[in-house]
Length: 63
Image 1 (cartoon, rainbow, N blue to C red):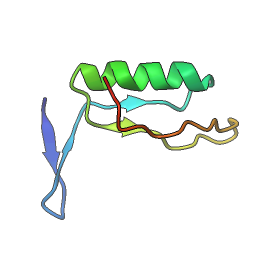
Image 2 (image 1 turned 30 degrees about the vertical axis):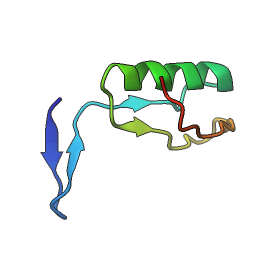
Image 3 (image 1 turned 120 degrees about the horizontal axis):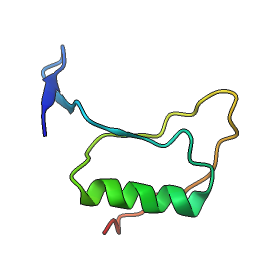
Image 4 (image 1 turned 120 degrees about the vertical axis):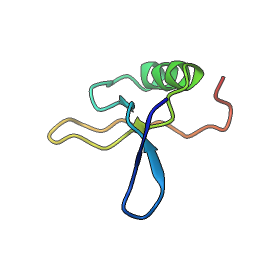
């Protein structure tokens, strides 16, 4: 995985997964689990306007 060093000294992965188009909560959970399983460490859950946000409860159980 490649990283970009930020101005504050922290590093951020340059490859990430966005969830803004996933409308089904169960599908969103499955996609995030799959991304983490494949070493993704940047999951962008920002809300896209005007899409209706979905509610997904965070879980410590990932894989």
